[in-house]
Amino acid sequence: VAGELVGLLSRAELRKVHTLSEPIHPGKQLLVGAAIGTRDDDKDRLRALVDAGIDVVVLDSSNGDSIFQLKMIQWIGNTFPSLEIVGGNVVTQYQAKRLIDAGVHALRVGMGTGSICTTQEVLACGRPQGSAVYNVAHYAHSRGIPVIADGGIKSIGDIIKALTLGASTVMMGSMLAGTEETPGECFYQDGIRLKKYRGMGSPEAMQERTQSLKRYFSEGSNIKVAQGVSGTVSAKGPIAHFVPYLVQGVR
Image 1 (cartoon, one colour):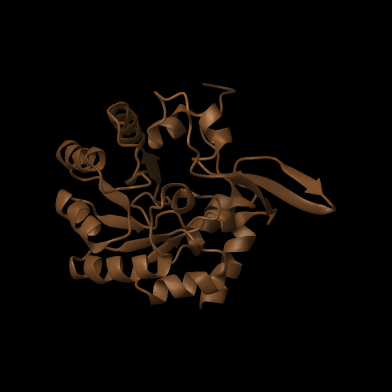
Image 2 (spheres, helix red, strand yellow; image 1 turned 90 degrees about the vertical axis):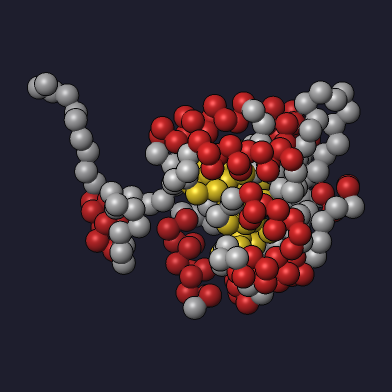
């Protein structure tokens, strides 16, 4: 139809295709993952996500060794057998075994160790991150399952420690929270450019998001027990400028 835009190609996209060392996806697109909970209504969300073309689903739970997650893993495996599943979070070999036996393809390791997570202080539940990563990775690798170190990554040195202890990769919350691509507005305080950063278990998130209430089993309670806090991080600019610095540091 004359005058109707049917496609758009940018120089940045062309450069990305040429600079990728190898095709990450048959369509030369980056792999896409999405996180869901472990409740029944999350099944409808997953169906929509699969229709949209996700490559992997992450089951988001502060304690992955639950009957809710085990049933969800089995349902996903039966309903979408080609979809890869990242389960967790776990901190012991026993927890890892249960999720691996259920059918996960990767594990997130860490409980209460994130910069804005207070699970260990509030519930006395968790494990030192170094011990958790080392022990879980030792067992998971024997089953051919990669491990993601989730929590406590504040610097390049922490990334190297996690990889040395057996992690295949790491999750970076606070380190990437200050980049332009993350949600939230930047503001100045005492001449420093900052960005707000909050945990899913923080009081603010629980007030605004029903998913946060469900994640911590608080949707039916008048008393909300927070398992996270809110804070600020320094603004870091575009992620395209920050990630190469991290990669070079690790190398």
